Length: 148
Image (cartoon, one colour):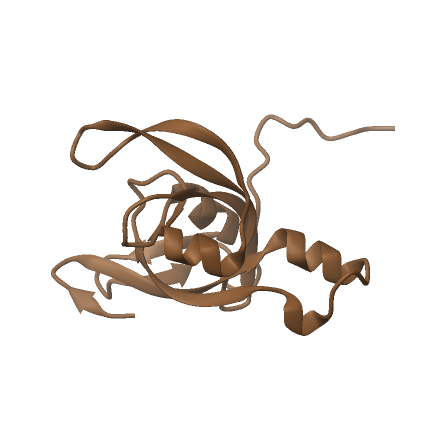
């Protein structure tokens, strides 16, 4: 993690979810599961995980579909979206699809929610959510408790 004029960066690990499933089913060996460690800009204004094409290729991800995206400069652009990627930060993990564009990897709001992390603006660090420092929590609002 580092300081650059109000920007927050974090080191995360990305894993091809299809490879993890192939390993679980004994189709590939564990050392064939494609994983990369990258430094991302943590951007709660971005929606999801954004990776450059080089990372997509290194992970061997499949492009599932194309979506229209609003870019930081105000333009709209059609961008590719991958199949599942496991995002791991420290002992927390979540699964998302990634958008492939640009050169700067971004960790957006959806994977941050899945990891149950927040930005500490004073330290410019990614930290576990203060309400759940030991284990990530999920918010399942609107789901009624089942009664018997």
